[in-house]
Length: 385
Image (cartoon, rainbow, N blue to C red; front, top):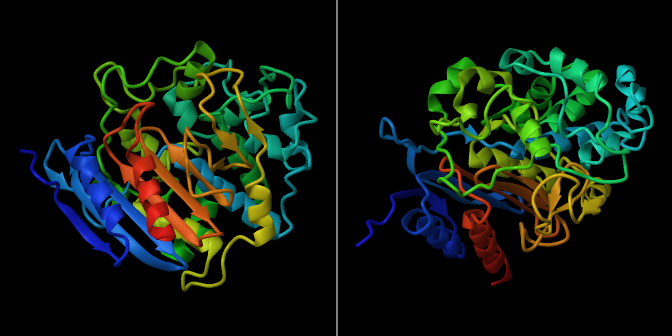
């Protein structure tokens, strides 16, 4: 007989199906440690956690345990960018060179800012060899991007910019605000909203972070050579794990650096509250994003087969956000916008339902991982019932 997973936290009446699925992810789907949080109309209605944050020591997952959320970081940067758009400081359809003149080398002078968010810039991988020290230092990556010719005529195709997205978008944020993206996010959003979410983890919070576990052997197919170069920043670090199964983003140096497209560290509650604040009043002021911003963010920009990468699974991308994309990633509907993260994380907002949702894990899954999808489906049933 399977021992029921120890699940802690709270769920309002009517959200029992979310609790049931969360528990089942432990008993039947291999969760080791995880948390899920849900806001509806500005109020937290689900806040659950359970399992082990670090199976090496037996440290349990606590209410405030954060984890590396990988590409959920991209959605955080996109929310930051839309704030700058609303402030009149950033034009998504202006050329990148308006803000970052050095970017325009080698045929990149006509690329608009929006294409950095929609994976159309032709820069998913870099030719220049980089070390881990280069990657965490910021400037060497920016210089490599400036010197990089696009891998296809920009705007004619798309291919997921797994890591370079962070420096492309992040450098625009830095040029506009004078702050690295993690510092801007902290000042503009994380501190005012009280989020345990960082792009650049402080030393004082490192001991609380969950230990990431590599996907089971064979669960993730080997990427093609270009995608592999993009995921590893041309060999600067293994991704997701080295040959011994050690997940590279467990490295304290990488967590402190805040790799800007994949290195955020957050609780589920932090991500859910961020997206809830984007679409509703969570008690700290009016919603962050206007209806016009959400209209723009949820307009599909690219879909179909990528230039490099796996066969098309149905993903649809807006400006910086993954959209409702069945069967690959079904969310709540046409007004859903957010991002998933390598291994199983999912976070999104939806202003039609006034929802902010996040699921954070430490046991990374593979391409057929349904843990997050099942939780989102349970949320959908609760909202419709």
